[in-house]
Length: 228
Length: 282
Image (cartoon, rainbow over all chains, first blue to last red; front, top):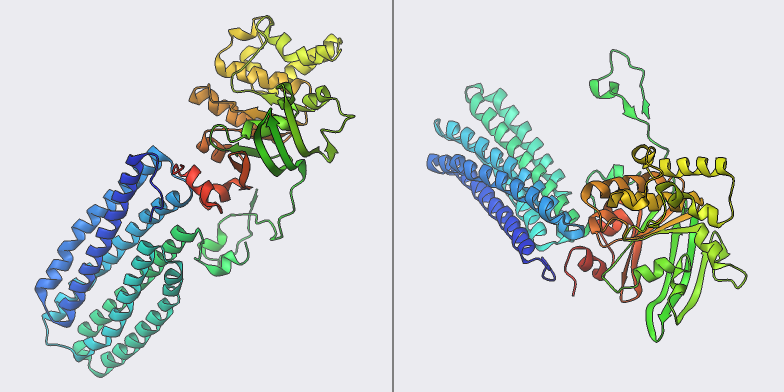
């Protein structure tokens, strides 16, 4: 990521520590989402409990990254690509923390579902999960590799995820009408779908930050940037 | 400026808030230019200090020149008021236009150029034998101005513009050197303003000052640009980021990159600029 060594070794060390914490947080968030969804799909309460427990470490990392980021801004006043990397790292951590919150919500709702007989409709959620996770992994990859093309490619994929969510919700609402006894279960699945849709929103944010960090291009809200 | 929007009860909260007036979207007009330097090269004896530097300096803006020691930034600055000619065996190629007029034309008197283009140095240099008041108007006196009323008016106006009047108005008879370092630097700025120059050049104006005195000079620079064009040389990257509208990066006597300061400090085009401003040079 860093082409040449900084004249201050301590600056390179601080930047590298910040980046490592972001990567660790991304890894933990990914694991937490996987555990929550596996807990749902395999009806495994232990995995759900693990996903919920992961959240505390992720919250701690978020605070650590914010603290380290502010310290770098204060001590070294970075500019150009260094400044963009620090700002992007801090924004990433905030998005990762909210993704991990979604994992916690999914795990809690999965535990509720696991208390009742299995619902075949849980499979409606699987395509959303796969789409959201692939967006998440690619957005983090785009940040790590400073890959502008990959970052840009993630953004339009959010519309597909939204459509998958709408479609799953429609089917689940139909099932509610047909089988009111399972209403709570279908409602939990709808909420889980919404969580995954939000994971996709955060992945989009991360991809946009990755493009900004790598190329100083603000690709958020294209309709606004076209007129200003 | 705030536009108060007339509201109706049906409007949402976000529709009812006061919004800043948006200027109409239009292409940015090209800035008016004070200096146009074209292919400027300067030699001190055999040594070429700067090589083929072409740079346009916008009016009523602050242009910062940054670069490592010996890159030629002070030499370029001095070329803007022919100050470099005071060094023996100096030679210059290229042209420098001030408001379209060739500064190096044979018919131009360097003394007149230096009156039109004032200069502030790294170390404040009030005349040690003169009072605060005498220091400010010395340029006018040397130009033959004798009218005391006029001198007094210009004295007060210059000191006010240099944000020094309130601090020294009761001590105008005291030696200029009795002031603090930051005050002495503002006194030198007042001295420069008294002859009503068109441009102010500053060579590291804050490098010998504490943070409070530096902040005062920086605020002053911000105020002065409404009336003057300012070109400053600085080693302090944060200061360049704070005070300047445009930044030029020089290295080994060449102009590597020039552009709006926000662009240079967030997304420079040249790798050498990026390496220098991020501290990865050499």
